[in-house]
Length: 356
Image (cartoon, rainbow, N blue to C red; front, top):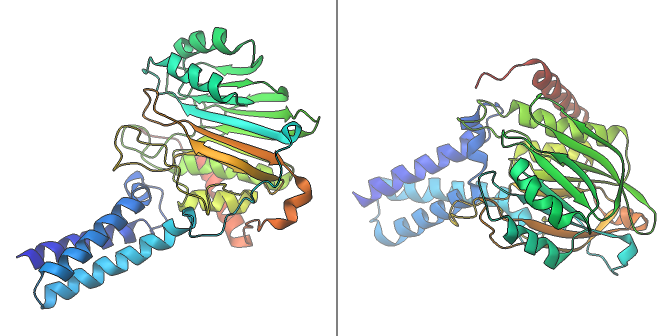
C-alpha cells in the first residue's frame, strides 16, 4: 500500500515538472515554474521513503525512478542559484563610494500598515534608491515626510489597484518618464540616475501583473512587458539596472529569455535564491523581487532584509559601476529564434486583451 502511495505521489510530481516545460501562457501551466524547490524536496523525500520502507516490486521502481527523474530535472533549474554555481555578476574588488549605487526594493502590500518598520529599515541601510511596489496614497503620505529630506528626487504613482509604485532617490534623476508599456493600468518607471562621480546610468522599475486566477488568466502580458524592456535594452545598449517585483521566478523560461534578449545579468546566480515571497510561509517561498544589471556592474553586496508586515521581504543590493571589467562577465545573448519569439510575445501582449 505504501509503495502504491509513494509511486502515485512520484508520478504526480513528475507530471507537475513536465507541465512546466509546456510553452503556453495559461496561468495554471506557468504556475508550475514557481515551486521547483518545493517539488525537488518532495521528490527527494519520496525517493528516500521508498528506498527505506517499500519492499522490492514494481511500485518501488516506479517511485524510485520517477522521483529520481523529477529531482534531477528540478536540480537542473535550481542549481545556478546556489553557491555551487559560478557567480554571474563578478564581486567588486574595491568599494569606491562615488561609483556605487545601493537599491532597496520593497513590495509593501497595499493594506499593510507597518510603514514605520520600513522607514526605519530605509534609514538604517541608507540606500541611494528606494523603490516601493503596491504603494498607494496612504503609503505615499507616510513615506513623503520621512524620506523627502534625504531622498529628495522622487517619482510617485499612487494607485489603488495594487500596482502603484514610488521611487525615492538620494541621487539625481533625469529623463524620467512613467510608461504604461503593455496594459493601461500597469505603470513602469524609466529614468536616468547620476552617480556621485557624475556618471549616468539607466534604471527601469517594473511590476507586471502575475498569472493567477484572481489577476490574469495568462502570463502573456507579464511576459510581454519583461521582454519589451529587454528588447529596449538590446536596441540601445548602455549601463542599465532593472528592478522590481516581476511576479516571476529567477529560473522561469520568461525571465531567462528576458536576460538573454537584454543581455542582463542576475547577481543571485552563484550566490543564493534570496527568496522574497511569501514572507509568512517559509515552505511556500520563492524569488519574485529582482534586480538585474548589465555587464557594466560588479556586486558589492546583496541581502534579503527583515519582515515588516508585507507578504514580501525587501531586498537590498549594492553595485559598483565598473565598465572596465565588463569583459570579465559572460553576458547571455539570445539567438535569432529567441529574438523572434520575444517579438511575437510582445506583439501578442499589445494586441490581445485580458479577460479576467
